[in-house]
Every structure is written in C-alpha cells, then in structure tokens.
Image 1 (tube, rainbow, N blue to C red):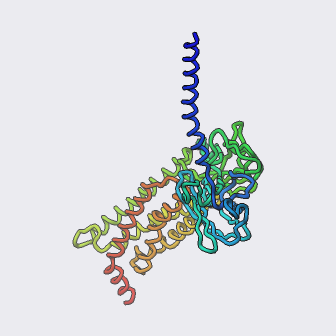
Image 2 (tube, one colour):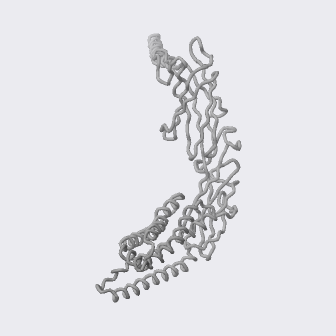
Image 3 (cartoon, rainbow, N blue to C red):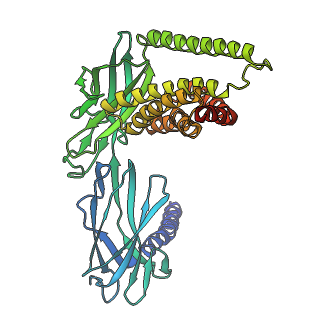
Length: 427
C-alpha cells in the first residue's frame, strides 16, 4: 500500500516538474519580447478613425518625445518626421515630411477623391542627423528606433444609382434614383464619438437628409429610404439626366445618366430619315445632271466643290444637333459649355462654308470650316460624354467622321474648280 502511494506521489512530482519546465520558458520568452522604443511620435487627435467629405482639409497633430533611456519623457525640439500614407490595399500613395517645433508637429492633408487613407510616422531624423525608424536596433533588448500611432481617415462622397425611369410620355422623363454614401458598407459604419463632421457614431448606407436635384428640378423623397424621384422636361431623342446631391458641409456631387427616350424617338427618327432622303435625292439629281453635262461622263468630274458642300451642310447639321444637346444639358446642370459652343459654331460657320463650296468660292475658308463639325461630332462629343461615363453613340460619331473625311477629300481636291471660278469672277 505504501509502495503504491509512493508511486502516485512520484508521478505527480514528475508531471509537475514537466509542466514547469514547459511553461517557464514560455513566460521567459514572453518577458523578453516586450518591445521598447527609443523615440515615439504619438497622435494628439481625439480619435484614431475620422470620417468626412472629399475636399475637406484635416489638420493632423502629433507629439514627438524620447521614450527610453535617460531622456525618457523629454520632448524632441528639432527634428523632421516622415509620414507614410497608405490606402486600403497597404499601398504607399504619398509621403509627408514635417518639421518638429517644441515637441509638437502638425500638417494639413485633404483628398479630392473618395478613399480611405492611413497616416503613420515611419522615420524621425534629429537636427544632428540621427535617424530613428521602425527597424530593430538592439535585438538583445528588443529596442526599436521609432514607436508611432496611426490615424485613419475616410474621405467619402455621394453615390447615385438610377433605380428606374419612365419615358412613355412625350417631352417628360420620370426618374427614380437611390442616393448612398460611396464608401460606407451596406451594414453601415460605426465610428468613435466625434469622428464625423456631424458627431454621428453610426452612419447608415443610405442618405435621407440630402438635397437632391434632377436636371435642376428638386427631387422628392419616396417611401423607400434613400430613394428620390423627379419629373423633368426632355425633348431630345436621348434623355440626359444630371443628378446633383448636396448636404450641409459636404461637397456637392453630380452624376450623369443617359438613355433612349421612348416617346420622343419616333419624331426624331422620322426627321432623320427625311433628312437622309433629301440628301440622297439632291446628290443623285445633281450628280446625274452633271454626268450628262460632262464630256467624260464622270459622276464627280468638275463637281468636287458642289458635292463637298452638300456633305459639309449635312455634318454641320449634325453639329447643330450636338450644340442643342449641349445647350439643353447645360441648362439642366451639366457643364457642357464646350459642346454647346463648338456645336453651334460648327453649324454657324459650316453652313456658309457649304454655300461657298457649292459656288466654288473661298476654298481656304471652306477647308477651315469643315474641321469644326469634324472635331465637334467626334472628339468634343466623346470628351463631354466621358466626363460622366455616358454611352458614346458610336454609329452617329463614326458615320459623321467618315462623311467629314469624304467632304475634306472632295474640297481639298477641288483646286481647279475654285481657281477657274475665281478667274471667271475676275473677268
């Protein structure tokens, strides 16, 4: 019996010694990995996470001091601190160098685009040239050069989705849009006290207290959170919708949408087909007439200026259409002054130039004028639509460009026609 008890006691002692031998090294290792920092740059901001609108300028305040050794607790008077700016993908997007004054440093930073940025001090260089960074300096004492605290800022903006639209009524477009914050997740965003401009600690995804206009018309809230509706006037075959969202202390955003207007399209289709038919009839009529009068029997012989003028009138009319689109859209809130001016100018100069080309006068002016509708109908049109990520009407654009090239070829090869007519006029 005594022998059995001795065996149990021996086993208990053995197990206890084994556990102590395993646990003690872990405790020792834990004590050894405690890190120390020679200097520290600490944020004096009330919160480590901040939320605001794009374009807002934040002032970041930090304090630098010695945090180890004989000078522990003393502020650093003369040094330069490098801040690393990272995005959500941990990519370095910027660096900021700030000089220290009496232990304190501050700098301003803003973002013109919606993004989340983290600001972290990564290097401190004293006035004597001593550098402290996050690299390990003394492995035996776990002493690091620089300790720092980060600040994360959300620069957000409004996001607009087109929920629904109705174009069944001629001259009117009924629009439903959903307004949300761009960066806020679907479940909302929880923030520390005072971290947002309004002091909100929980931000929902949807926006319910904003001012929303559609082509300048005030939109009204619907029964669905974040959804607004408005009815706007539309007389073009394509509805160009500009949604402006504003809120107190927030930067106003403008979002564009474009789609076919069902009720308006038939009238414009008829007008287009009639225009094409008239153009074809004119070309065929005068083409056959000139062919009979020509000794060589060539369809174009001696008539490059005439046919070039007819095509110039056609592409100038297309330029007029884009000028009207630009004018109507500018009144609705789009910044399309460039399209308005170039479109109306290309028609205003293109039509007289077309008449001059038909009469074989002022060839230099005709060549200059035909470049305006070519640029308006393609380059300017694409630039303007791309500003709001709107769909480019490639069929119209490429057709206009092809006609412009043919027109340029005809006019530029009509030197003899313009010259002979000039001699006849002089005589």
